[in-house]
Length: 219
Image (cartoon, rainbow, N blue to C red):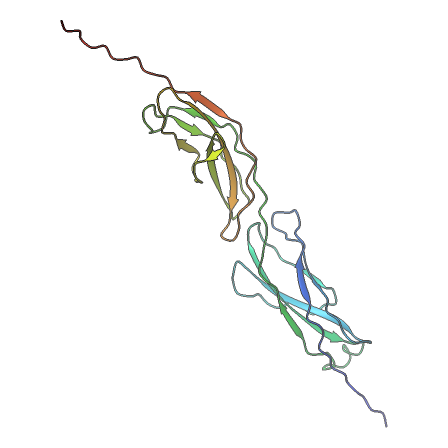
C-alpha cells in the first residue's frame, strides 16, 4: 500500500529591511530575510504595504523571490506586512501541501529626506517694516522634494532667530550697529525632517547714526 505523508511546517517569520534607492519616488527593494524551512522544503513570500498610515494594499502573489518594491516619496512612512510559508516541489501539483504562513509586520520605516541646497543670494534692503530703518533680509527660494515643504532660519552671527516659511525677515535695528546675516534651509514632511542645508552666503550692513537735532539757544 502506498502511503502519502504530508509534513506541513511553519517557517521562521521573515524579517524585513528596506534598501533606499537614490530616485525620488523609488525606495528600492523591500527585502525579507531569515525565513527558514525544513529540509526538502523552501520558503515563498507575499507582501502588502501601506504608505502614510493608509489602509494596507492587496497581497502580492506568492513568490520565492524574497523582495518587492514600493513607490514612495522622500519623507513618507511605509509599513510592510510579509507572510512566508514552506512549500516543496510537490506543492504546485498537490494543493494543500503548502505550510501555514508566518507573518511579520515591520516597524514603520520613514524614507529619509536629503538635505536641500543652501539658500542663494542672501541680501538686505530697506523694504521691511522694522524700526527705525525698515531693514530686512531676503533670500531666494529653495526647492524641496515632492510632498515636503521648505522652511528657513535666518541667522545673525551664527545664531538662529526661528524657523519660518517666508523668504524675508524683518530686522529690528538700532542706530550705529553692525548686522550680518546668513540663512539655512531644511525640508519637512509630516513624519520627518531633513538635515539642515549648508549655510548661505553672508550679507551685512551697518546702520547709520542720524545727525543731532539743533535746538535754539536762549540768552
